[in-house]
Image (cartoon, helix red, strand yellow):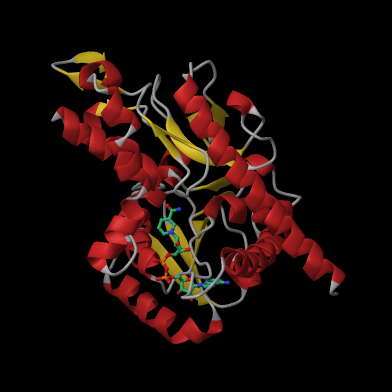
Length: 337
Ligand SMILES: NC(=O)c1ccc[n+]([C@@H]2O[C@H](COP(=O)([O-])OP(=O)(O)OC[C@H]3O[C@@H](n4cnc5c(N)ncnc54)[C@H](O)[C@@H]3O)[C@@H](O)[C@H]2O)c1
């Protein structure tokens, strides 16, 4: 058997982590032959809860799980890790302004970037789930200059999975037969779910999703809105935010990063923008990517119609605003030193 690898999950006492840790420890991300040492990082008030999570992980009697290390110290949490799931973040509380939320999170992701820089493996793959995920990933990467920028990503896979499920439902096929549905931009309500390049298999023949649905008003209207507002719909119904589906999406994201995408298929990841498709540079923007040898590459040459271009512009502007606000918070805290 291979040597164990170290994986960290932050926010390990929270509700996404509760599903995510089990999925990882079962081998669903790194493979059923890959032993694991799980690092569970949370904040000091959650240390007791973490102990309970450790007990439960032990009680699962999972063959791949060699050790579980609970900690509230980022330098211990990130020590020698090969992959990091950054789930922990400051939640939005009642009456909190967007700027306050951003400001609290910028500080968390600065500290975690610095710790990753100091103690993680240099080829660590970092997935940011905690919101605002794109901007948190931007901040984290900026404080970890010794780790390549390509190793930082933000999760839009839940949005992709939601969009794929809606399309499968509409076409009456299994989700496994649908591919190449794209999420562009920010993991927020300005994201653009795009089925124009989607494909599906029926009776062993590959077909175009948009041609089969043949309903532009649905694809530009109800479909986009359902996906954009799905998080809010889950909260309204469950009185808690998406957790099981977020954990599954985090596994899918890291699984494909680790193992690659099938030929001709792409997935969506928030990654540093190089300006492709007229997106703003130097923000974490969700693009369709293909993955080979643990390296993602933005899919080039897709044709975008004017509607899509206007949606990409909107979400790109929001990401620039978020980035600039984050930078102003960091500047302000630097000048207060
Ligand atoms: N990108 C996505 O698609 C997506 C989807 C769903 C949820 N989310 C986000 O994921 C995050 C976690 O969601 P949840 O439902 O698990 O929340 P939760 O409140 O149940 O758990 C969050 C955990 O993070 C911990 N935490 C806070 N600050 C921390 C820090 N500095 N270091 C380590 N841990 C810290 C908290 O103590 C808590 O245990 C939220 O920000 C949520 O908005 C993102």
